[in-house]
Length: 259
Image (cartoon, rainbow, N blue to C red; front, side, top):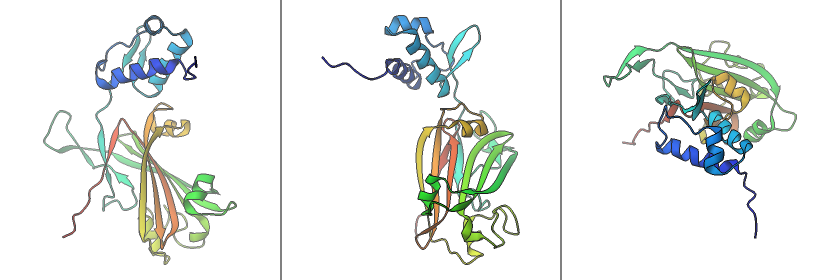
């Protein structure tokens, strides 16, 4: 008879996760203790401890010292708007005003939005080389952006451009000069590069430690990842990885209907 190679803790993890997401364990409900898990599921202490640790990393439960673990109340998800014209340099943006909590009367409370950014030239990482079709010894201009609303991190974006493409031009550094913050299309057009198409791929993954620190979430928590590439005549000229906490925001796209 064959034996399963699946880690024992996964059985506990999947059951508790399912009960939380289905609502049978409601926000604020106490999660079975480590001893209760050992008894109810017939597993060892290591498996019970590991299952609880994963649920905590995913942001589904929280520990209360001296009391145990409880189902975490997920924050209400807000919307990140795709390609707002008034912010051409931003992949996704927040409305400048938010609805009053509990009100359906529309925007009322002004948000304090802030962008932080840092640019440096670095050897192109393998994933970036693949996206931009670059040689192994290529250098990219990398700009890391962090959008915050009322002091809370919202979105992390890392933009990479082939350094050779903009070298010696007024737009070599994205956030300097007359076109600072004007977006890839306008900046590239100013040096004779016409962006012809943009593609985006959206996926879900566990957040890496460095990104989690920037976004103020737990390492391993679920994040939405948008891989965006600007192309000029089929040639990639810019690649951005956008990371958004999955439990805080939804991405909203609007499409015009041709007349």
